Image 1 (cartoon, rainbow, N blue to C red):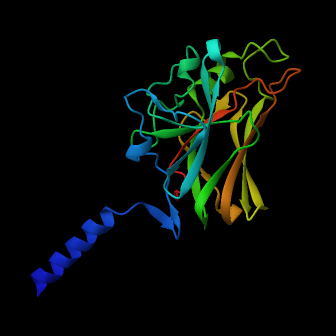
Image 2: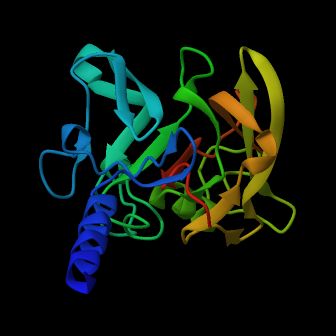
Image 3: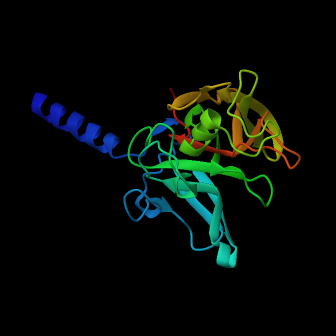
Length: 237
């Protein structure tokens, strides 16, 4: 009897270990480790052939593709990256995290503002999203430390009165459920390591939206890149 009990218990643990990670009902965590969206090579990114969506956990992500001909093809919205390293030298480094890689596993998400309007991350099933881990990109970390070359103060680095603010918005059936504010930088104090952001106060949602605002501007608008990194979306701390 004892051996049978131990066998059943071991079988149950094995089965549980194979199930998708979930913290609350209907909220499977987006780890970005699914084979279908994993970058095809090391130190690269996952790009759709054309504008569309991809999934991870309980979430659906939009990716926009813009072909500017001789100027190249650019991607906006949500990009899955497995790039390593913290150094930013040129635009090809824009999909690196300031932490040097993912929070866990190999892959993480780089969110960038959509030029076609505010994009939202959809949930396949409405749920309370406990939180997520965020980090600046290597590009943003470089701009905060060294300046952007474009802002009204001659592109200077962030001063003590400068900030970069992420606002997360929840909606359910197109009705706002609340907002959460999180500073990606205050002066030179930037979020360059994976840091947990609690989203539970948004309540049950079917969409999440993001807006980045800041103090570094010129006559056109914000000069700090509107990029940040996400991993383990839907996780508890």
